[in-house]
Amino acid sequence: MLTNVLCFSEPVLAKGITSVKQVKKLAKKQVKGASILEVERDYEDGVLVYEVRMLKSKKEYDLVYRASDAKLVSYGW
Image (cartoon, rainbow, N blue to C red; front, side):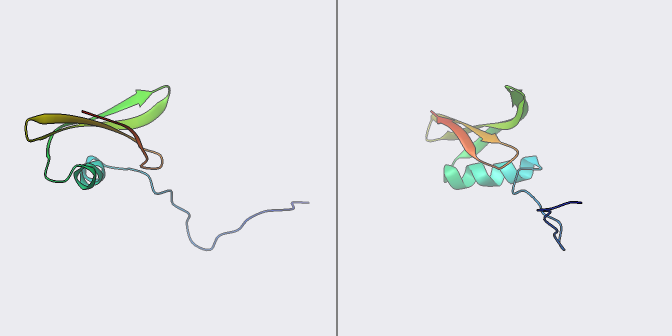
């Protein structure tokens, strides 16, 4: 007999990143007015991440988002 089973009538979707387009939108919200130079999909310690390089006023920004939940895990310039 099963106990404590959750049932959902609608699919449960994580709010993660599934495309380069999504991560570009997130990055542009983080660094308003910046141009995106490069987006890379990579794995860090077995976790899928998106690395975004941006440029604003001669200053480069490096952002890293975790794909599973769209969390910004690293931000530098």
